[in-house]
Length: 280
Image (cartoon, rainbow, N blue to C red; front, side):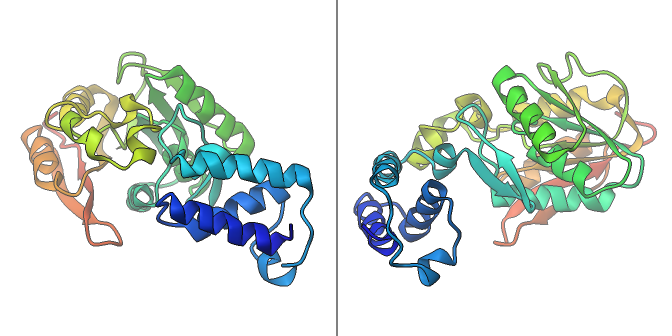
């Protein structure tokens, strides 16, 4: 089959499987298998594809039609202009989380020390270190599999960071100028309502925010005081309906300058504040 014929076939299979972005996914899988780029679909549509690559493409189409995430098939995800390694052991980086990084960069100055709690793939911390000068960072996560991926990303991107296996602050040492976190925040009862790509393939531990979705915000806010320097910033990614609750948690703990930031879709996405000098 030709390149274009395979692409058209892939679109039909994924559309029949109710994959929302079937045309994009078919193209990306074909590019992954053939080592091609976006332009080849238009510049070289009659290019013959070997039987071996065609078989590989069909195998990946079958998995994607079964709602295995595209990123788990390619092992990659773009985030903040960087190419991250992903696996079923980590939450797939999502565009929404770029709002967290963008807001954190506004608070980050040369030479600061950053703590990324629940670091997962390391995408937040490594992006912050990439786009800042002479900063240091520590990524903490309870999952050894996630930390392995984070360390691989650090090495692949050439960005130096320290990663520590820790149940929240259990094994964290030192003090920090900035704390960022995209913690699990989905209510347990709502996980089964998520799309199959998320509920069946993202790690449950990376989704589960317990009964009210606020469990990790409460624990991080209550435990972070001795690790944050006076005046240090704190930023959380949140679910669209959690802005008021997380803001109140920060205010009750003595944090100052608490505010909610919306993402590009107009949804509440980040809550940020600053450690007070007399509280926390």
